[in-house]
Amino acid sequence: MQVEKTFYIETFGCQMNAHDSEKVVGTLIQQGYRQVETVEEAGYVFYNTCSIRDKAEQKVFNRLQHFKKDAGRGKVFAVIGCVAQQEGEKIFDRAPHVSLVAGSASYAKLPQMLIQLEAGAKRVTGLKFDSDEAFDTPFTRRDNPHRAYITIIEGCDKSCAYCVVPFTRGPERSRTSASVIDEARRLADSGTTEIQLLGQNVNSYRDPSATGWDFATLLDQVGGIPGIRRVRFTTSHPRDFVKPIIDAIDSNPNLCNHVHLPVQSGSTRVLDAMQRLYTRDQYMERIAWMKNARRQIAITSDIIVGFPGETERDFEETLDLLDEVQYDSIFSFKYSQRPNTAALQLHDHIPEEEKSRRLTIVQERQRAIQLRQSSALVGEVEEVNVESFNSAIGQWMGRTSRNRTLNFTHSSDEQLTGKYVRILVTRAGPASLVGQSL
Ligand code: 5AD
Ligand code: SF4
Image (cartoon, rainbow, N blue to C red; front, top):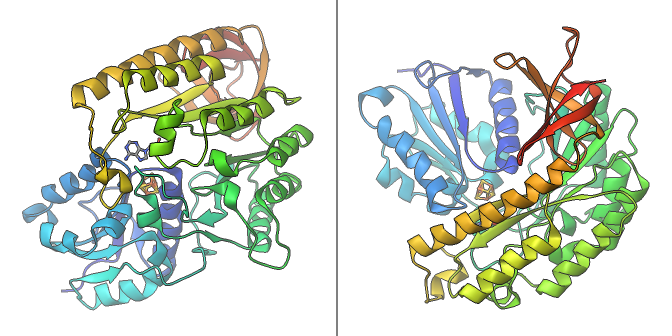
């Protein structure tokens, strides 16, 4: 029986995954498939998965479980992304109704894999890292006409002891600067004003063509494209984060004054066990570059609590680092054991309740810091790029260059999405600001 060429896709995980899905959707549409809003309507069901922590990984198996029997009959299930790459063919054993298992390094082969599926193949795989190129497609389907992701580098050559990404996304592959600039220009021509450059470690970007640009140069060049008003980037690894990036931000106002620089721990001993390749002091040196910059740069971070062997003292060093840096915001996580990673060999595991306790303390400490920082913005004028309107509360939502969420009221019923508006900040909470347009 021919399966209808309609597809549903659900995406888990990071911005890289969100953007991969935009490319996958574009490829599917190009191949004659039509996107639908529910699994029920779909012939093909795609899950673009994340395996960064165990909880994220379990989500896809919960979904699959639900469709194991009648609900999934007549549909083709595809597991793509990081869980696919990590678990490979084992997924077919665990969920026999899955017909395609493919990691992100195989998306260029999606059209061929689709042909196999259409012919009724039951166990199609794309699990090899046999390309030294990043997946590049002209068919990317972007949801937002004003803000766009551009991948500049895929994969990761680091080996942080807790991290699954080098196994799920493979070795680093940088795109040529010409293709990045070309994509950014085309986006600008069609009305995009904000661009976010993506990679697991954007700082190790190296143009593979003769031009040989490094990341700071690429960043500056994208920020100079006519029509582009904001450029963001994520994620930065402190080891490869160099001063010219700050100099570029200082000299080019189109580059957003926000840097996400995950520290993971405030203890050099733990950083060493994590194989992060920097000490607390070296990290703080990079923070000092930002604090000494001419523009006020927002700094955000990721923290892991309860890494094997983390003592109370190590943990306190993390709390102390939060006080010292005064981050604009952080993402914090309990350490989660991941397949293949070096940390599996470590003993001295921290009990789950203790991890939870430390996580709560980190989050409370950071909440107080953020509240203090946000309060200082009351009375200031901030420019936002408007993203949406929340009719329930009658407020627009936009983001400042420093990546703060600002909810605001506007006197007329003019359509503001995608516009840049100046807002007077009138109230502050730890996570967002409230204001009114000027
Ligand atoms: N356990 C907990 N958190 C993790 N992260 C990555 N791997 C793990 C893990 N095994 C966190 C790191 C990283 C963010 C994306 O996820 O803080 O920066
Ligand atoms: Fe999750 Fe990491 Fe894969 Fe992103 S790259 S989807 S965070 S495992």
